[in-house]
Image 1: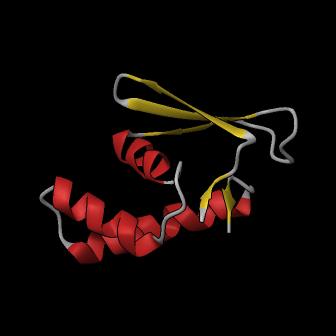
Image 2: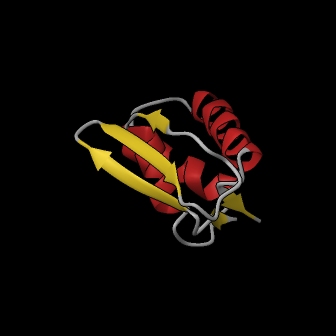
Amino acid sequence: MKLNKNFLVHKNGKETIVVPTGSAEFSGIIRGNQTLGMILDLLRKDTTEQQIIAAIVKKYDVSREIVEKDVQTTVSRLKTIGAIEE
């Protein structure tokens, strides 16, 4: 899976903003933290949820179980709006 080319990512300090282009079916803005930014950076290339989880666990001192739940929720929401291509 990877980030749909019809979504642009902008990082502003600690905030990450995702904006759809005119070609996307979703209209709105998504705001998130640096972790969302990291997930989206990893999605610029074809990747898996497990690779994203491993990268976050490696970078931050957090339990794998918490990261798995958060990544699954985030990926699911991004898929719902069409921001992730399978």
